[in-house]
Image (cartoon, rainbow, N blue to C red; front, side):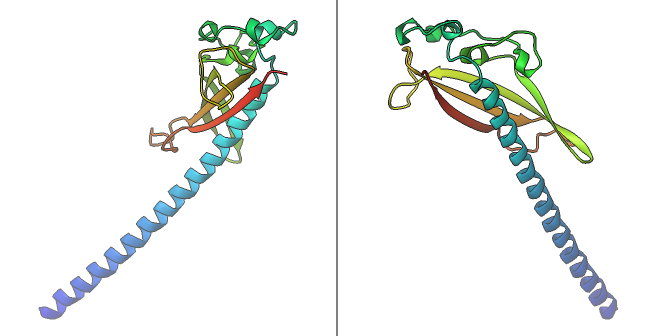
Length: 171
């Protein structure tokens, strides 16, 4: 009888060690997937920034060279546009047109499938110290947040959105 109990205890210990090893492997794989998702999200954010950067600095500068004091007031930035550059119908020909636009969905294809990412953009004027301001300046801060869509387990794989910020200047 004691030998049977010792055998069962030994079997239990081996099973627990095996289970622990499997859990460690699973965590390692999940972390690798999360790192890959972060890299893809960073790529989507950079690509989205290129789309914004290619536009005119301001609605008033689309067809001319206004002075900084003639640029669009910060409180007058449009919101809720569905920008054509992200699959919508609005032209969005100036940087502030992307401010709080309809969140866009961008897909990244890899062998074996694709991943969807939601893109949110905010635009604000910044002063010479790069602090947000309610005054018109020759600099706009563009903040892009990218979050992956739900996976098989219905939770996003990224713990928090990837945030990419760049300040664009008026030339």
